[in-house]
Structures are given as structure tokens and as C-alpha cells.
Image 1 (cartoon, helix red, strand yellow):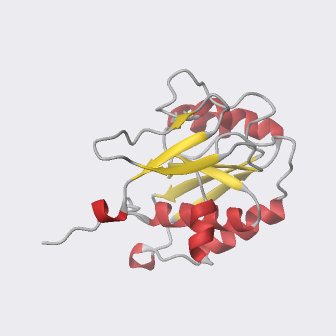
Image 2 (cartoon, one colour; image 1 turned 90 degrees about the vertical axis):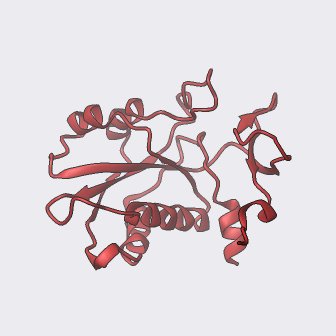
Length: 190
């Protein structure tokens, strides 16, 4: 059921790093993204895949992990992602990627969830350093990075109380809490 899949698709930031995600699995996830809608059907997205520790080690330091968790620099060794998908925009096709990369990223993450994996969509990227580290040609715009792996953290959704905070947080047991607005707050009538 799609509701269950969406509910289980959380932004996981801690993983079982030793769990190997093979290239076949990554390619299966890109097959799903390939089928998603694209503005004017231009299909300008390209995907750089990484499931090798050496390449992963070049990607990891160029990502910011959780802006609301001020004293957390990101996952420690052993809890880092075992794979990444870097979503690129091919500027030879278009200079405006609209929301194509968001649609593709969500589709990849839903596919990963269905396979028992988890991930995190990361937009806070040191793009120039990442470009240099991986030798990404200038004709590709770095749009998003998806961190993937076998989650080792619990993420729970809780309601935002009226006037309350929307910032996610972790409790003393390391459970990650994500406040969500109530349906009646997000459907408007005029």
C-alpha cells in the first residue's frame, strides 16, 4: 500500500555501513527514476552511482547532515551510508531542471524503502569540492545527493502542537522525532 511505503520512507541519517548495496540494486533504483515525469519530457537528469568505500569517502565530507541537530557532525564511521546516488542536471539539455530531480529522488527513495533500505535526500552540499573530488565535468549541475543504506536508527512522526516547533530532534535514546503538521492545517479553503 502506498501510504505504508510513504510512511516508512523517512530521512535516515545513520546506517549499517557494512551492509553492501550492490550495483544491480542501484541500477534498479535508477530504472524507477528513469520512468518519472520530466518537464517537457526533456529528461535532463544523469546519475552518478557510488557503492565503493573509497568513492564514498570522497563524497561523505562534502555533505551537511542535519541542520537542526547543531551538535551532530553527521554519522560516525560504521554508521555512514554504504551507497550514494548523485543526481546531476545535464546543462547541454537545459539550464532549468524544475522539480525533475525532486520527483526522481523521491521515487528512488520509495524504491529503496520497498527493498528494505533507507536514505536521505541531501541538498546541503559543498558542490565545488565534490565536483573536484569526483572529477564531475562542468556541464553537469550537482542537484542532490541521496545517501542510501540499511537504517540503524528509529525515526518517528509526531504531530506539531499548535504554535509548536517543526524542527526535528533526537531524544536521549537516539530516537529521531519528526514533527508533522496536521492535515487540517495544510488544506486551505478560500
